Amino acid sequence: MGRPCDIIVVGAGIVGCAVAHELARRGASVEIVDDRPVGMGATQASAGVLAPYIEAREGSPLLDLTVRSLAMFDAFIERIGADSGEAIPYHRTGTIDVAASDAELDALRATEAVLARRGVPALMLDANTVRSEEPELTDRAIGGLLIETHGFVAAGALTQALASAARRRGAQLVEPSRVRRISQRHGDLIVETDRGSLTTGAVVLAAGSWSGGIAIDGIKVTVPVRPVRGQLLHLAWAGTPLRRVTWSSRCYLVPWDDGTLLVGATVEEAGFDERTTVAGVRELLAAVNDMLPRASAAGFLAARVGLRPATADELPVIGASIAMPALMYATGHYRNGVLLAPLTAQLVADAMLENRIDPLLAAVSPSRFGDL
Figure 1 (cartoon, one colour):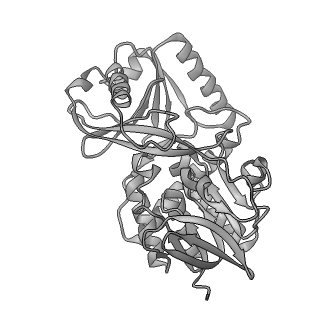
Figure 2 (figure 1 turned 45 degrees about the horizontal axis):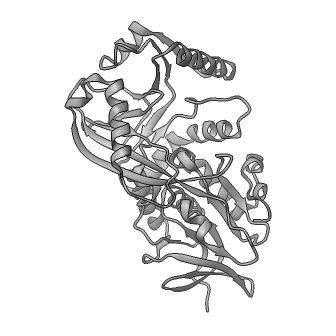
Figure 3 (figure 1 turned 90 degrees about the vertical axis):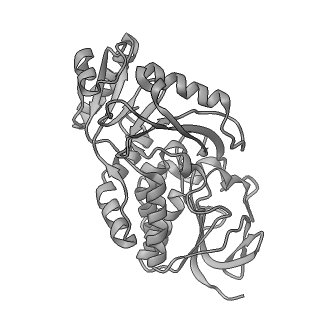
């Protein structure tokens, strides 16, 4: 069996497509394998929020990762737009995190202090100012924290553009097939799918919540990534348009140029159950009505669901396998897949093509879960 490509990327979500594009633009021969169309896993239910500082905690490796990736986004979007020829809706209009109690206000002040130490502009708003910034907010809002560097991107459009950009750079999307096993043979890696076997020099495992279901020769315990269901609502908003992504303790709101509003998101331990549920929709409707009193007049367009790949420490798994060094993990991004896509692609490409191991990889190494 000949070797048709240098690297196979398993997974066609936001992370897999970002990695495939970065590898291909650096000259690697790349194939993408997934049993679903591009972006139809967790990505389809992503609101695309780019907000690392909302829950900023000093000393958190996740904060360092997401902040560095956010700084890459302007150039990332420009590059993908140029390579794909597609427009990608992208805004850096900031976020407001709204407090409705003294405890929530104290938490925002703590976040403001963290950001001040990092030199990140953030502004505490009193009750009048926060409702001046977002007139549709409930009268129960007693303050808020404005972080101007945040933003959002259309996750589905970005993923499609990444796939197009990767193809323009020579990458190929294998016809839909599910990967069952990865093994080694005579110096090559064999990717066994339900449609046959593929031979390659290296593999990137970016299959999200399904990563742990792929058998890997020589590894007794697969990567410990579990699915966490997230439901999201899409509403036709009829009130005053929100200026920016707006958060509360119960939900977040993402305003689009067409006047629609995304409301997210539930966090549910439901295994691989990908159904939208009455309970999930009801929870989000209650949350948005509590935040925006006029939300009851909005049109209901859709409910979406995705399975977010989580690890026990809520950090992604990025790095080479100990048991199979030609296998690179890029999974477990949980709620930060879109935000971490540019950095993950860079870290993976640097390691695989240039043998440059970024110090950040130490915190997200698969070895923290054993001999993976």
